[in-house]
Length: 340
Image 1: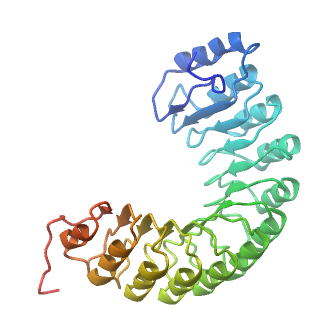
Image 2: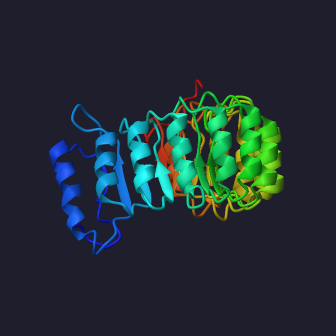
């Protein structure tokens, strides 16, 4: 048995195992089910000719009746395994099935039984799921707090608006890579989900600075925001964030039009809490602005500057704040090139 009474099913993350070994370990834990209830199963990124997410889910469904938290992301699990799990489990709080081959049927069965208990659902990249299915899920799961529906091509703008109107308890939402996300969607998110703490809007090409104004106005306590790849986001939007969202700890502006002005404003108004800032492939940055950010943000631990070719003297930036870990694609001892 593994240590801890709450985790009979051991975490198996990115570790290749044979089918017989895993099946045996799950079956062995059955002997203690009368004394302890297995509650968590985490098998991520494990797949192969003899091992799939379905294999684990079918065994777990037969043995671990009291599982409440399951992560089988990127294991090639299908609806068959999820349906077996949903039907066998007495109460599911957390289900992460990112990148799995699910259908509407499996989600509908899951929701029918676990609608009141489900708090966290991640279905990133489950391309077959329809807008109708997700709308049904939102209506039936008012207690949901964490939702990841990134990279689902069938979602519509109307569906998203309907969903956030129902899910007023959301604190974490990932909508990355959705063409259906417009400023109008963010308008509804910030008004309907006042508890929002982590919002991921990366690679949503329709977003503009208007969304950042909305976030700054209605979500001033947000701590984690990702708008990377939203090329219409500029310093004007960053200003709105900097002036209002002083509790920001994580901000990803990579591949946006953010530049010197926006970064300087972050250095002045968000310097108390920022810990991670990602600015990769932002073309309008200057070394002075980055130095100001590193100097003022005493809690800053991680700074991404990949593809920032206007930044040459990385060593000077590192010298400003030794605790900041720079991620970049230049040698650290690069000096200024007078020809640039």
